[in-house]
Length: 419
Image (cartoon, rainbow, N blue to C red; front, side, top):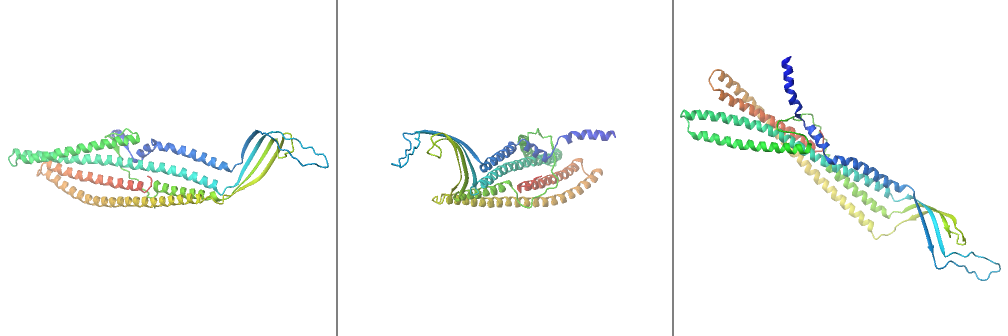
């Protein structure tokens, strides 16, 4: 029981320091400033919709005026058989009015404006989703590059141990006079070359860690353990990239603007009324301030505008066609990228089969060498070299499995899917 407890205590730090891909993506999203814009976009969309919808509400205005003129209206009817006394009009006039206007029909302009506003909101959301997807692709790439670099480090170190063992054997044979010193120099040159390669891998690993820390604000170092993502992936039936969806929305926006331009030639109908106080009112014979009102329906219809609206419609139609062409081209490029990923995955799976056969073969060789070592027929270094080769092919197989997972996750994101 004590042994199990000690083992658990030793493994706890490893479990605590283990990093997963979903964790990195979640951390990257939480520190992604564009995510904060979503709430702003929601508020902007609500306020914009309310502002456009309010055009259907009755509009109330208060207006007032005061005028002073050089003369007033005089009526001369000539000589009449009876006496008529017309009140003399003042040379000044004034009024205070409460006016109301209610739109009855606007050619569908308000409803199309609301639709355009909603499409603009959807476009902003898709732009944010596209930026989020690019960040996911970058984080995933760095995550797996770190794991592959760590795997390559182990492979190179094993290769280094094999060369060091070979150098010791050659040095012993040189001292025995069996070989000349050139054999030792050749191995030393390979060791220096290998050391240079290990240094390059170490620098790249630190670079990947630095970038991933910057994107996720995690404190990752070379001692962290990264887990391969092995959960089931659910690929969408078709490509649903936010860039494609945004191009489709932009196309709908152009078509909506085309319809708005076309509605400029439709009739407008509005109800208007006013209640006023002033002098003179509608009764020009009155010489006292009084209240008066009016109510009616106003119809306006622009019959000819020198084809201005027609040209605006044509412009938006052409822009919509251009966006549709861009969407088609973009989709074809994404489909080609997906196809490349599928071919790469198939190639890696074939490599895995070959590596499995090599591993099985090396396992037999190591078992034979172990028997020879126990019989005293070979040295421990000979056995160690073969054992390292087996370990090396196992690491290469593990790296290939990482590559397969890497390519599958990238293919999922390229198609617009999520983990």
